[in-house]
Length: 258
Length: 67
Image (spheres, rainbow over the protein chains, first blue to last red):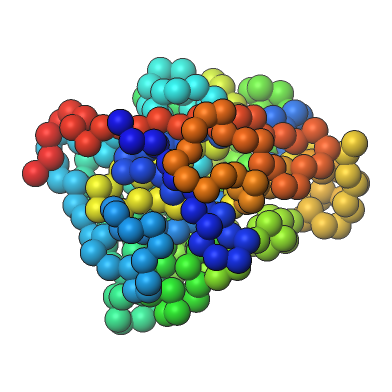
């Protein structure tokens, strides 16, 4: 089996971790006693063979059609318990971006990646948007196989035409807050809202940019929860289910306050 | 050591201890990833810390079948 990921130097100082097709990364973290935890991902997508194609990055459209989809056919980018199991398994909690709708389960709706204008134009050529054909869900909280009450997060996008998008790397962030650091303390999750959940697009996905945006988290947000979970997630988790494209991670990080 | 960043961590967090860990993989070797993946955290402050990442893969032939 090929390596589950490859590192390239995209240029300048931007090292990129490219997950192989249907590969995932589990990145455990320690943030003891957090009451305000912010997580950010600077990421992009490429095709199934070329690590760094010229813009526009075309040919990624794909539909993983029903019937019989599993959690392996859904997008998962967010926080998860630090184990080797996928979300929805017993004892696994997940908070984040996914097209596994809490209303229809992993078996509901096709899992797709479509060309998109991010709701801001008519060209439909600037972005790639993962989604679910049956319900426009981009976020969820799962405690084992139990969905937690959540509102719908706005769609997430990745650059297709990097000029039109505003840069090749997209920034997506989650903020988790809780009144105290007890394991049963209810967690509220927020993300940037508006026409989408994309914070920005950039050609310079630096740590300074990531840190600044984590510190100045958007104030207009969509909210999930508060929810009480059987386990508090303690790892970052990125899984891209598609076969015509691969997920690239430029930088990742978290800030916590206790 | 915790870092105190009053006013830089959003409303209500003034005076709270902030920890951070950010990674841009700058020290990762180019090429196929092998484990253990190097600890490449570029900014770490306070008690926040990444552990060693793990990778895995769902095979293309994972059930169910696809059209």
